[in-house]
Picture 1 (cartoon, rainbow, N blue to C red):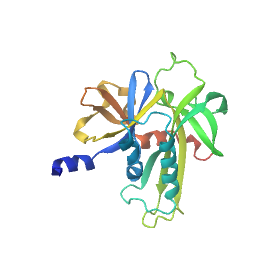
Picture 2 (tube, rainbow, N blue to C red):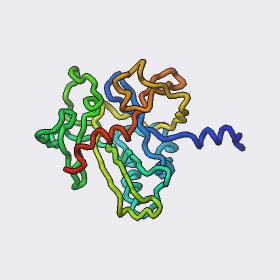
Picture 3 (cartoon, one colour):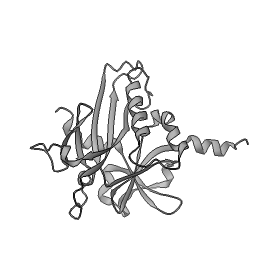
Picture 4 (cartoon, rainbow, N blue to C red):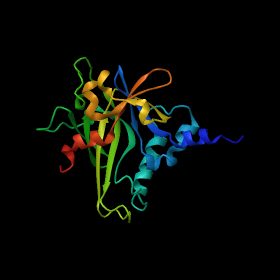
Amino acid sequence: MRRSPSVVESALKQQQFLRFTIQPDLVALIEIDAHTQQRRSSLREGSSSERFPSERFANANANALKSEETSDLSASRPQRQQVTELLNIPLDRVVPMPHLPPTVMGVYNWRGEILWIVDLAKLLGLDTSARTDRSLQPTIVLTSITESDLSHGSGENRSVSTIGLVVDAIAEIEWHSLETTHIRAPNHIYPELLPWSRGVWQSVTGENLLVLDGRSILDRADFHADV
């Protein structure tokens, strides 16, 4: 059956997001990555929700990131951020480091590379006093790619930074069409989160979802870049 132009246009505007909870009462979305959405479309088509942990998600993102060495990036997005992997990190494998902010839990050996582990709730300035320690930490690996000359895609002037964001729980991968008119400033619900978010989006069921800005999080957590 042929779809109407309005249906096709709506589908093209959809973006892929990861749903997770920062705290039990705070649900958030973060955009996965527009450049690699098509590579990961099978995750959404294969099931209504990909529950954490997702090996297919991890493998698809790892392959997509590696392919950047030979692929051109969109000139309209010189700075990009990707959710490259979902991890369940044992707390005893996170090595604390001295002289760093309390938001930094330490470093983790991630496939032979140093991954800085950041407590997202603390980074956002939320109260974590009621939280209890867990042996496994649900972690979102967020990667920033900045390239000064996107026209060649050679990667010679590329800067890549990666951090692990510890959250309360990781839920599923979803498709949403987040029109600007549907996103409200978080002032009336989460005023303290204004610098970190794109706003609050209300779903068709009336649920308020905080849409985090990956760029802002990476910019404010750049303590690790030169370590």
